[in-house]
Length: 117
Image (cartoon, rainbow, N blue to C red; front, side, top):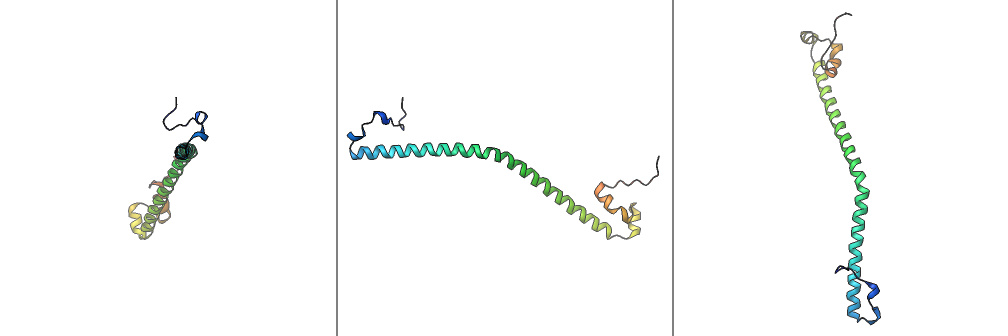
């Protein structure tokens, strides 16, 4: 059973057709070939880009992680600069020394000041 767009060339006597019928048959064949070509290209591109979509998701996740790290480092640099701008008495009031500034900012503020237990 043939669809309306399919052409069975084995049953067509091409030499017996008029030039209008030949032109119509040619147009239908070209249109059908274009549909088949587009479908094949769509399937080929889908098969090609499917793994790239997964890779793209991983690249995006890596970019977001890099962007967050840069933002965190920028915030840390700002905090370090602000603490370095304070005098030693203000730092002592907060319980830190000038040498502890980077550790306080990057490690969350825990400074072990005691001896061994």
